[in-house]
Structures are given as C-alpha cells and as structure tokens.
Length: 471
Image 1: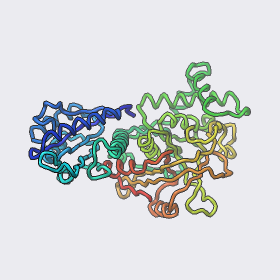
Image 2 (image 1 turned 120 degrees about the vertical axis):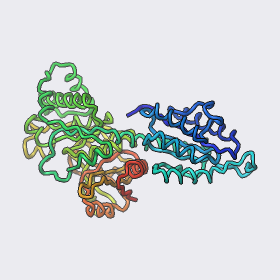
Image 3 (image 1 turned 90 degrees about the vertical axis):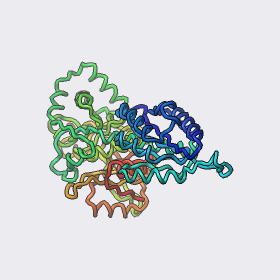
Image 4 (image 1 turned 135 degrees about the horizontal axis):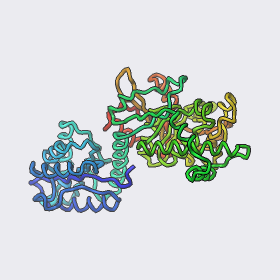
C-alpha cells in the first residue's frame, strides 16, 4: 500500500462571483491537505486568470496536468468556494479520464456575508456540478453536509474517509491475488470466477503447491533466512515443548518459500491450500505462515478461498490493519444476536487478546496424525469493534456481489479449541437469512475496526458491485 496518497485538486469559480473567494478557498484547502499529510497535483495559481477552473481553456490545462500525473493520483477533490462553473469541472474530468474516486465539496455561506461581494452560492453550485457529473457518467463521493467549511472538523473526517475509499478502490483495481494450490475437493463453496474478478481489475496468480514444497525442500537448516524465520516464529507465539525442533524448521522453510514467491510475483493477498495436501505431503500446517503474512498486511485466506482473500484485502485497505478469515460457526446459547466465529486458525497476532500459542491442528490432527499438523495459531480474539465483509462472484448472474456490516467482538467465554471469537451483530438472524437465501459462503473476512461505510462506498459506488449493507 502507498505510504502517502496523492490527490488531484480542482477549485471551481464562476465569473459572477468574487474571484477572491476562490483564491482564499484554494489557499485554505491546500494548507489543510498539506497538514493532513497528503500530496497534491494542482495547476499553478498563475495558470488560469483566477487560479481556479472556470473556462474550457482552464479545463484543458487541468486535464493535461492530471494526465501527466495519472499514475500518481489516487483521487480527485473538487472544491467550490463559490458557485463554480460546472462545465469547466465536468469537461476537465472527462478529458482527463482518470477513473479514480471524486470528492465534491462546497463551502458554507455565512448569514452576515451574503452581499454581492461576499456571497458564495456554493450550496446551489454544488447541485449543478453534481448534475453534470451524473450526466457525464462519473461516480463521486459527497461530503457529510451539503456544504461545510474547509477548516471544519467534519470536513477533516470527510477527507480521511475519502482517502480510505481511494485506498480500497486503487488497491482492488490493481490487486494481484495469489492462488497457492488447488481448491480442496470438499469446498465448492469457495469457487469463484477469475474472469469476473478481472473485470474489476483483480488478477489471480496461480502456483502449484508442489512448487512451494520444492522451494522449501531446497532450504537448509543453517541458512540465515531459515534461522531468522525460526527466531521470528518463537517470538511470535509460544511453542509447546513437545513440538520437535525438526517440525519448527520444516514450518519455517515453508514460510520462507511462500514469502519469496509472494515477493517475486508482486502478490497483495493470497489464498492457500492449507489442508490436507500440505500436511500429508509436506508435514506441517500453513497457518503460521498465513498468520504472519496477515500481520504484515498481506492477507492470506484458508482453503484456496480466492474471493475470501479479496474480501480480506479490501478490509485491510480500508482499515490499514490486519484482517482475518473466519467461519460463521456456532450459535451462542440462546442470544440470537451473538455467535461464535472460529478457524483452525491463521488469525494474525494482533487479533488475539492474550499471548498466542503455535501448536498442532486439532480436528485434522486427530484424523491424519498430530505429527503432520504443527503450525496452528491458537488463542481468543480480543474484545473490540469489528467489521465483517464478504464478496463473491455470482457466475450465473454475471456480477460481483457482497455484504458488509459492523459488530463487536466480546470477551464472553467459549470452551472450544483453536482460534475463537465471540461476537455480537445486531439483527444477526436477519443477516443469516439473507446469506442463506443469497447463497453466500460460510467464510467471512473481519477486521478490528469499524469501516463498513468505506467498504460500501468503494465497492458499490466505484467498483459497481452489488453490496448489501446490513444494519
């Protein structure tokens, strides 16, 4: 993910109104964006008669500049200190054709400054600009209030929200998702269409699991990267004494091999064939590698769930924190707004409320032998805010669809082994009915913050996915 985002900035004006308002608005906006740490692309003040965009000539100049910087620009901010000229703005955006999110802002009038010299009429001008954007086919993001002051706290929140939307849109529109291994035969639920994903800009990059095994098998115990990975694993969680040193090194080599493939192929997130081939043919579980990748903001989904990996990556982009993949797994007694989410597991370390343990898979270990199953991340998810999200490809309908919502992880006890989370979601039963009727999977991506509105804005407004926002 980019460490610093860049916005193209357009300040609108209209000749009937005092151009000083546009100049002052530009100055305040640029100062605010700089203070918040964003980079900007904007025409020099002397490039147009007013330092703002009004005429078709101004529009051409702005479009040429945006085109020169098109690979740097994450989103465009349109600000109207006065009424603004909608044609200049719409034509500049149309000519530049950047296909990035657009935020439309208009400045408040003040009741005691509505004479000819000081009136803005941006309240009205914004309607005209948005009308033209709609006619030209541009999706855009609105501010919380129809008009607001540039130096207000609400506009600060609007900018931060918009930045997160831009991060999700750019990230998903250029995402490379690693498919590590074949889908387990028992999981029709995780089938997804690569072609529909590609229509959004998401590329699936496959690799046979044997290639990762082969690369891991060529690593020696004494290699620096392997010894460093063993040390990292021991610092990541406690390993029971009964786990043999040979199993720790075997797992570390798999981690190194997988990470190298991810780096060599520019992978943003991955879905791994985490059972049962790796346990039976290599001799360990993939969970540790996947958990540690997730902690580094490279989400890794279980059971070759490619759409699950995309869902995780979207949440990571929106929250800028690690995400996890879980099963909607158990009711919680008779509290119908609570449930248990669980997996074997590969939850990132930051999900856990207490020191985690790296041990053997429980259910699979009982079936194929615990000696083949070292690497599971065990612990309980800490209490706190949570956003859940799931996208998939509806191949029959030929569309990408999703649901998103918010809830809470709780500290309520639950006596199950593995990676456990107890959560509360308002109107959970209605959500489950929607999922069942719509044919959604049992897997869900989760992140430890509230960001459902960011996901909805990015996915529905800009990526044109069919999104249900629960609650």
